[in-house]
Length: 126
Image (cartoon, rainbow, N blue to C red; front, side, top):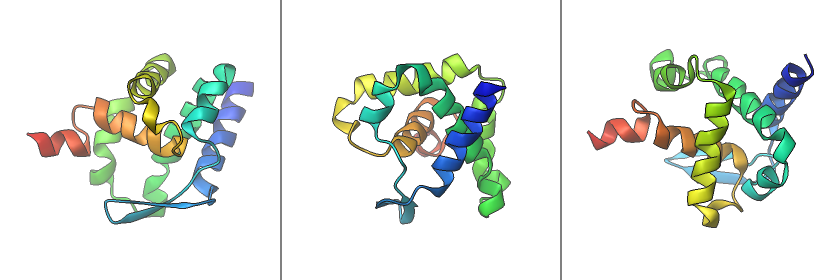
C-alpha cells in the first residue's frame, strides 16, 4: 500500500511539475521536479518514482493523447515487472552520464522510447 501511494504521489509530481520548459519535437514539456542526478541519488526510491512516471504516462489519453499514439507504450510496459522498468532506465542513464542534468521524467521517456520495439523512434528506423 505504501509503494502504491508513493507511486501515485510521484505520478502526480510528474504531471504537474512546471519549473522550466523543454522543447522536443515541437511539443512543449514542462520540466519535472527532479533531474537524473536527483534520481540517481535516491537509491531506495527509484522504482517508486518510475512506477509513478509510468502511471502518469498512462493518463495521457485524459489530456488528449490518442490511443493510437499510446499503443507502443502500453504494448511495451504491459506486464513489464517494475524491476525491468528500472533496469531499462538505469541502463540508459549509465550509458548517458552527460544527460543526468536533464529532467528525469524526460529521461525516463527517452529510455522507454529507445528500448521499446514499437516506439516512435524505432518505428521511424524501419
